[in-house]
Length: 146
Length: 138
Image (cartoon, rainbow over all chains, first blue to last red; front, side, top):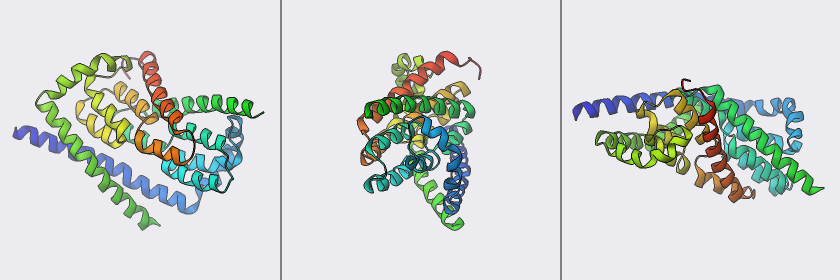
């Protein structure tokens, strides 16, 4: 029994230590990103690609925000934009398709990699699957709108 | 801004601690009294299609229902192989925190029901595919 308590205690300590060294620096880094607006600066580079799978330019910022910072953050941006009428319902849906499958990718990938997962498979499979599925929805919505 | 980040990081860690510690301890107790084996036996017939042991079922359910951290706390003590953690990572990466995040999608007015089914479906399909594609020893 005492052996069980000790091994569980050590296991828990290791697990939380691992999570601590991932989560705290990552959140600090993301806060710095947000403060200096790195996201806005990087967006220009990806816009030709996102347009191909059905996204309008207005959608790229909430999309990128969600991919990096998480669904809630991306959604926060989107809710504001939809209320102002800058992002339509189909665009909001398309963003939700992509972000539903692919958000907070740095955090998720690091956490599972720390438990032994192969990081590039995690990232690669999710990226490819989300992009293909979104492109299918994008084409379908685009056709319907015509 | 740096201070704000650290403050937020520590606060987040504290809220994660409150979720993860009880789950990790509970799963360890279940394992110690062989209750996890019993549970695992019931789930193994389904989990084998995605290449996961029955013991990973609580992690899957907690990941879907609560979040990634709850899931990790539930499987961290189980000595899963890299192949298994990779498959679980892809499945839970695409579908997790489903109640809360579906509500968020609802506030985006972006057909939350469709997104929910899509996420669960894609997660399971990717799990099935990876179990076929990935080599035994990752």
